[in-house]
Length: 324
Image (cartoon, rainbow, N blue to C red; front, side, top):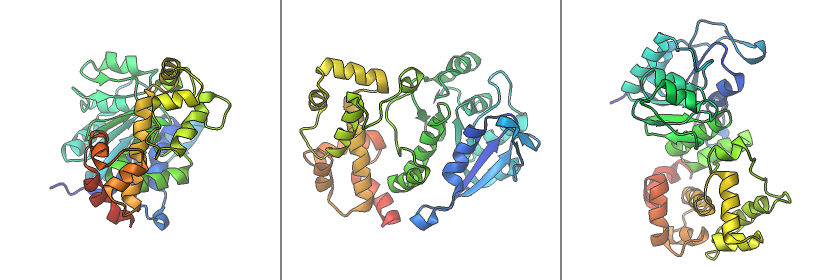
């Protein structure tokens, strides 16, 4: 049985690593939000290099913990790395291997995936990194299955993400899996970020996703869809008609801008709403299914299980008591 504390999160910081990426897990796990029902995490900022550490803009940081702080952390995050061409320090790689072998979930955000790969943790595993550096990761570590199309990859005990803000997505996903959607949503609201984004990196490489409320038909349709998730008649054909586009044109534009299909996006929104209702209400699974656009619980269950890995009632048993 692992002695690791589920609320202890260690963040390994490096000299000359970008400040924003380094601060992402600190922003997610470091704030005291216990007044809103969010667990208070024991965040440990760990120096991966001898300090003080210099980061973006010449800012100097002193990490209060050494690598021994990884010994009882349930989550170890490597938020970035200074150069894909440089090998990380061996003591850090040894510490990551030991933590992972002892049951810790190890997370590599952006260029942090290169550190996990150097430790051998990603061999034979699927992993994400910033789209710009994905070819370099694949070339340097051919045993890693690099996926440049996604915001993050959850491979159970290893999580990797694309660049910058995708690190927030990965950290919130980790919170959601361990503590429920309500906790993740509360943190997201405090950070003023979306609790969960759909699609992959394609939407950020060339084309930004239109915001709801703009004069772009797709931006308005996202807002319309979220407001009417309870309508069982709301499907892709209905969205295309609302956007005044043919089904084929709508589907093509949606995929180009978001990296996912409108059907998968709509399904993800319905499952997210079902999560929230399972956590915060005593409605039956059938009633919740109807609230999010399914005919009944039988229609909801296979989609819920496929996306979240558990049945709706199991999800409620796990998370409803924590937020009640």
